[in-house]
Amino acid sequence: MKVNQAEIVMSAVSKAQYPEEHLSEIALSGRSNVGKSSFINKMIQRKSLARTSSKPGKTQTLNFYLINESFYFVDVPGYGYAKVSKREREAWGRMMEEYFTTREPLKAAVLLIDMRHPPTEDDLIMYDFLKYYDLPVIVVATKLDKISKSKRQKHLKVIEDDLELEPEDVVMPFSAETGEGKDQVWGKIKGFL
Ligand SMILES: Nc1nc2c(ncn2[C@@H]2O[C@H](COP(=O)(O)OP(=O)(O)OP(=O)(O)O)[C@@H](O)[C@H]2O)c(=O)[nH]1
Ligand SMILES: [Mg+2]
Image (cartoon, rainbow, N blue to C red; front, side, top):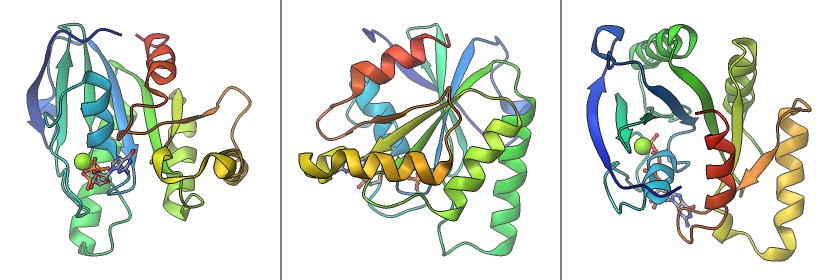
């Protein structure tokens, strides 16, 4: 996909702030620090349109990025970050539920899993949550550049098995560092737009 235009249109904390023109949306989801914001930047070839950080918990709002004036990537705060209070966790849960369960323009979720480790309990819950609401899920294994070539298949298989992937889903390896996997993931995303 050739991206000619990309801009942030809204940082939202509730429904009233979501964009109104109802273009298709593709949402990112995954643990804090897994690489959701980096994924967006790499996919659209912008170094730092979406803010990233080596510290978890960078993204705190639903950030709507308009791409080619035709659809949105929605960057979402991550889960599984230990240093959040119960109140913050509950607020996060409400925000996620409100968005993922009621948003009509949402066409698919990209669920990012850190390829270096088996999925966490929270990853399994997130996958099941998305499936429960009948949202198409694109499972992307990130940080591919950190795994040696000989170990890649094994790591992908662990993700597949632990998530108990439905037959229609596959795990797509990706690196926001090298761009490996980018074209394949674009191919998959285009199918939902
Ligand atoms: N080597 C490598 N590093 C990556 C990759 N993707 C992300 N990172 C690094 O991982 C860290 C976290 O990336 P972010 O994109 O901010 O992660 P996030 O999922 O948006 O995190 P939150 O906003 O906290 O939920 C940063 O230091 C990135 O540079 C990748 O594919 N390879
Ligand atoms: Mg982020």
